[in-house]
Image (cartoon, rainbow, N blue to C red):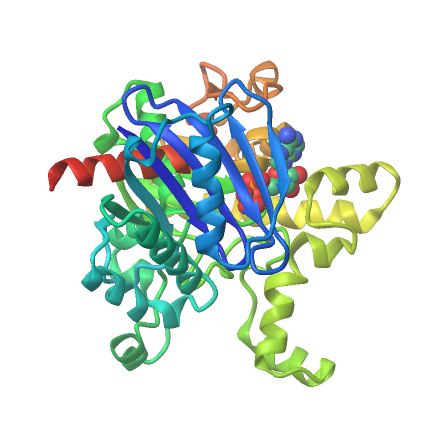
Length: 398
Ligand code: ADP
């Protein structure tokens, strides 16, 4: 079956068509600047990447352009829409309602809408993509795959904040966690690569991209993760502050004459390594700036690494041990320097890194030495494939 995987944001939309038999990608790309002017990127497997400027005032028109590209006589990868057996949608927040992916129905959409308070920027945008696809492919089954679902196994002591319990009962204030599709995919791959039962491993996954989070996976279940009610908690990220004393919010608001939304905007978009360095949210720029003598760029990277290190330490304690640590996403997959620096500080766990293996990029590889007590792996994440697998499993079950 071919699955169209859609990750829909407010003004952009990423897509892939994956064949569930071969697990190969037939085509992928993105629509950008939806509602502004419009740009379609289309890349068929083994073919040339095409970039087209085209008006796409709505998401429906954007998805129509994707479909036109997919069935184009010359460069398309399918003959007609009938060759798309299902659509898998990434949905950011499933609240406590969704502990697993779900077939999209009217009731399911209502339940996602009910979680939108918790993710006002993401869920409505995800649903726009769902509705547009429903209009264009009314008979194709669709599945929602949630970023939060994998973490619904966290125990109370991990997901409750130390605030009045009524806030949890009345407003669902708690830790939810994100990147669940990635943490689940990577932790499962680690078990396969180490040839160990998934249900017997204590794994820490470090998803280090622009958005970044760490997850403790014990016996195949997420038991803690660094992001919280929103993706702002936890690690210092590209532009997000991560953990911060809430009192600083009031203090910054007064000093900078900002309201609550203004401070949160700073903490989400102008903080992290971007805010610390004043240079960039991209670690390639930070490395270049550091080499050119920029001390703040160096400090920003140290702060980032230190926070990752602390979460790994915390999760090793939370699981009473750790068998393997996995690095994934843009930085985790490509930045051996960060991996090495973090792991050097974990020597007390008996971790030893094989420098040659650690110098490789973007491939599944064990980067610890055979003597290392804890295995360290680089595992490129593949959220689209994970979404396609979930989608097929649910559609077949119907
Ligand atoms: P997002 O959360 O936006 O998906 P990514 O997973 O792409 O983010 O991660 C972005 C970070 O990964 C950037 O800081 C960038 O420097 C780093 N990165 C991505 N690709 C590479 C690469 N090929 N080489 C070195 N660093 C990379």
